[in-house]
Length: 120
Image (tube, rainbow, N blue to C red; front, side, top):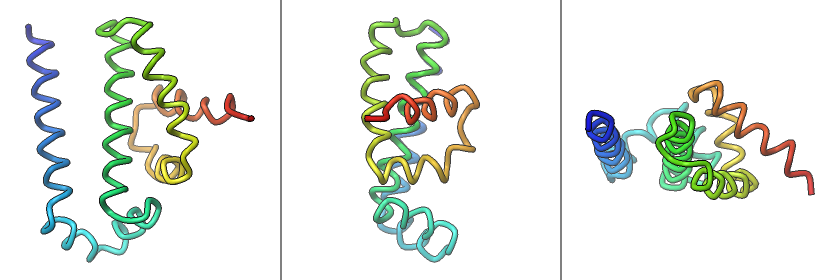
């Protein structure tokens, strides 16, 4: 029950955060920062940037659930296949390369390994 409550709290918190990130007011203020504007330019604008970041957050969370045996391998393999194709999208790859240092070491290794196994 504790784990389920923590998962719900995490989901609610991240949803609230990303709602705020996508508010008109936040987007206007954030573009005043040259650092933040550089991140936005990687993705073609703030909305696309936050979609990409939220996608990486979701995949990292699912990866953590898999590693702690909260989801089974069959479920994880479907998500992993989606992540492998997602990282081939140039905007996703650019944002990943610039922001991956904020992720867990194990997740970085996983996503970076997709690039070496996707040579087609």
